[in-house]
Length: 277
Image (cartoon, rainbow, N blue to C red; front, side):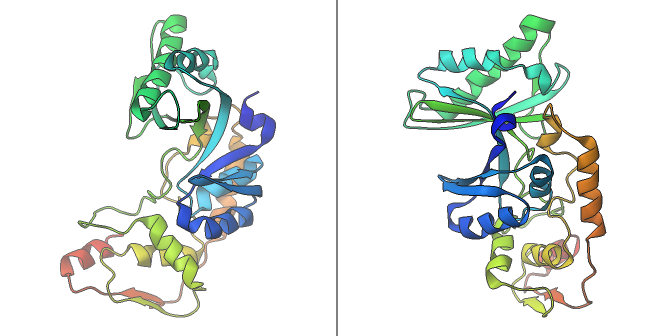
């Protein structure tokens, strides 16, 4: 069994200044035993809650499922441990992967090098066993992996979100400096707007704040536009349970009163972009 299966514990990457509301959101979506850490929140969850968190969370960036934690004093040892994981549980040689890393206060002092060494271990694992290897795709891979090394302790995790959750899917065009979706959602949350009083944004830009307000008011899942999630790559993925979570979410979407959410901007070009969302 992998570490997340034994402990039921995951890590949500969250901006430090919104951990308070992100923690409340996690608890509302079924997480328990939360605790703050550097750049995120640890939490426990069952499978259903993990699926709900990825589908509904407006505030976290991604949820990581740890596969293995180990002492790591060199890149060679990272490679060796990487080859010990049964990667056929997560993908096959015809599929793609991406590895992202962060390191701090460790002998391995470059994040891209750490990512490269884990990638090499996975590629060589398949090449030695099957004579062919998965490809690398850093934009839309089948499997997203994360390696975090702090004080020479490494954690290899699967990104159960399958890329940052701030990418909602409704942004078809962008302005020069668009507001981040998670930031917009946090602003809505801090105002304690309940969706029953009119909301007007006189400097709406491309409309991100209005879109996040609409998602919140209608109880539309923030990840409604995603075609796949990272948890679908986990060996214990429950397709029937996931279908239930999605169906429950779809049935819970509510209409919003006409003219409840409005905005305007002096720049007609960005207003046109906002109308396309």
